[in-house]
Image (tube, rainbow, N blue to C red; front, side, top):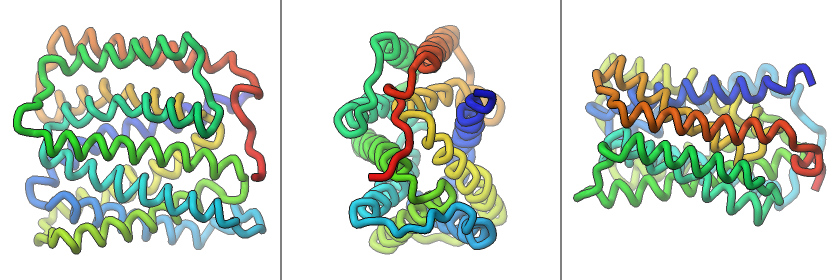
Length: 306
């Protein structure tokens, strides 16, 4: 199919945007508390999506209300994908270096694979599993000399919870796309709104507030519009056709992208071992995506009502 590569291209653009977020968030965390930072970013992104939804959202309407199960999945996706996954990632980046946070999140495909097999029936071939192992081996090589653990277990715990939240979000979104009753734009808008409400509650409970500088405001605006509103819409759109496991493995490319951004903007060095790790990650991602091309309709469930 001529446009079959478009969802993968969209997902690749998203990884670039999200990789740049690591640098922007680390800069912003020097002045803005993590939960407050996350709440402001996603609240502004939600406002942008509501405005877009009001303009073009009617085109996505399927004309049927969601049933109780689907409403539950929407709420689960909002809480897991934004309040937990994104909110806790900001907290993790506050306590841990960006490279450590990124390393820990590279174990998310294991969670997605387990949930996908048990809930979605989206298994992985032996070749794809080999690609996943290769990518994770590359991640270990990349971070083996940089991962810091001592005295940072709170940060490690928070990031692990963030990864579980993201895996849950991916599975919930895939299940919602199977129903065919809610479009990508509306799904992104509603789930983000739910997640922002949860973030705002956590921020209020933590009492995390601080005055914003001009740089902080500009950083939040960019993160909210490009790295959140646009990126999450493209990601959810890609999830309509790409199984959650494959899309999560594609995120491993962010290891390379983050290294490049860190080298350019944070003046971090790239060692030969890190180059080996990046090469293994790219090879693993290629194996998984190449193997996916041969999968037929039986292996990639079509959207259906349920």
